[in-house]
Image 1: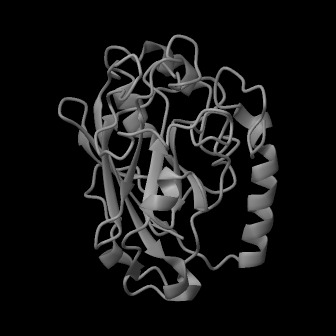
Image 2 (image 1 turned 90 degrees about the vertical axis):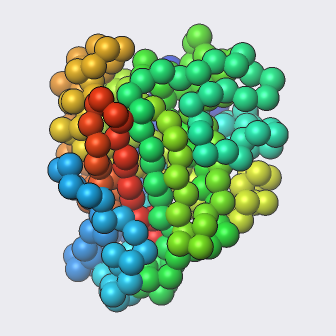
Amino acid sequence: MNGRHDQSPPEHDGGLSHDLPVLARRRMIRLMAGASLVPLVGCTSEEKPSASPSSTAGSSSAECAEIPEETAGPFPGDGSNGVNVLKESGVVRSDITRSFGDSAGGTAEGVPLTITLTVVDAASGCGTPKKGAAVYIWHCDRDGAYSLYSEGVTEENYLRGVQETDDKGRVTFTTVFPGCYPGRWPHAHFEVYGSLADATAATSVTSTSQLAFPQDVCEAVYGTDGYSGSVRNLSSLSLEDDGVFGDGHERQLAAMTGGTRDGYAAALTVPV
């Protein structure tokens, strides 16, 4: 197969060995960019998230940097590793908890979660929202399995979806909190496209990155029913040692609000 993914994907996201080439490229980019970059968003508290265009409107271009480029992993679903969900009718949606189209029709279970990504123009100092861009997001279920690829869910396509950004550059997806599988910190993948037409054609990707979840929120979620396997997996991991986030996760760490009873909201500003 062609594309930027392995031809024979492992059971999960590839872990450190899969992501080392991307990690090396990120370190080189950061060395060239200098040490003056400051994080746009990221906290581990339950405070109200500040990831919005208005929060970065006063930033100068020296304080703004594009979201770090990351591997899409072996389970992208955009056609670059064999399965293309982006061209299927129904993929453009805000609620990604259910499978759609000709899938098995399953629903992903777990602690409710909304993810809001605000896409902004890095060249303008992150003060200009990217209206009319598109975001494709995907992540594993609470068992650590990826639809379309992992054993038991190959006939499902839940936890995948596309949306066009609004006037403020925002998209919000309704989903469930992902589990933690061996070798990777809990995360969600996303790709930014210049337009909805580009996204549904799976062409001309502007940026590919990942969102990280704060440790305290992960621990709270994994203490609930259905996430028992994630407790063990998380205990052997850290953001600092993760193969993707280990060289700097400040600009990819979601701001969180909420709780396990009513669900969480995650927010991240995405400069492209």
